[in-house]
Image 1 (cartoon, one colour):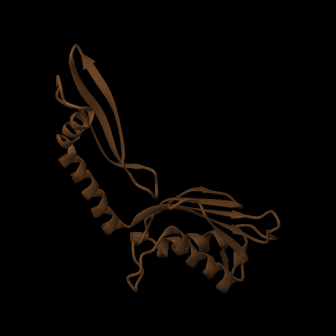
Image 2 (spheres, helix red, strand yellow):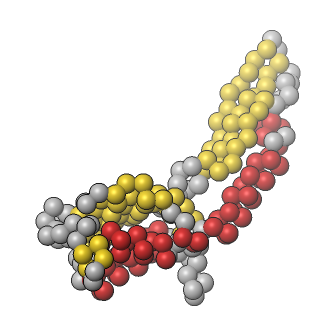
Image 3 (cartoon, one colour):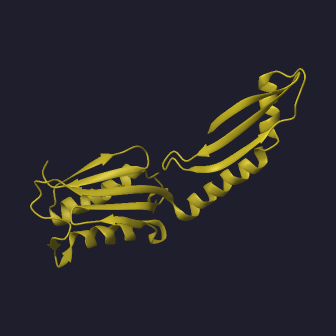
Length: 184
């Protein structure tokens, strides 16, 4: 949560204007918000003015937070995944493995391992793929919590074990992962 405020002065009266934001730690997107100005006062201290102003709007803020959490449980956590190739890689994402292009293999895996197949492939060339708005499950089949790194690690293992493709997995914050294919 992020809270910013400004003190307003009108003659001897003071009030506070605030902006409260709930930020998703995985996507850095705002998931809830409230803003407003509290009642003016002659004598109230800043913490009291701020508390009164926020409390007048907190129910709507909490409703927005709950809506986001309900969406997480129904549709999974949003993350992003970037696939790249090292220049030393002898192929590219259009190279075929068992009759399918590597980009198709990766896209099929992402589709099969997201909640309701939800993702957006926003960039795709022979050397890069960018998946955004990827909705991964919160928990695996055993009930263990899944994060971006664990989820992407399964793709990394599949590429390495099934197709013998050397790759490196890198974490980019909580909600971003990158796989680089080929020798470094």
